[in-house]
Length: 106
Image (cartoon, rainbow, N blue to C red; front, side, top):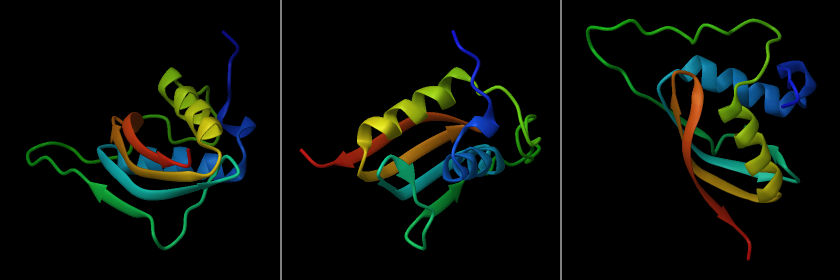
């Protein structure tokens, strides 16, 4: 499989990857997708999951560039398929996309 690096993504997609790393555990809600690009606007909500008695810090790969995990490349492929629509909920675990609910035109 071809290696995909974070810096090979568009700035908006890089911003989404960084946001997921910062959340670490939680979800992103009401994320618009326009022409295959996530749009971070005022409608986007971030819900962080906080577990007491454990550390809360970003995932280990918060540097400028790194190879994307399979879950991230799958998310990018799904965003390409959405084209224009809304990701109602994108659940994040360990800084990686886990599951999402999507609304798109028929």
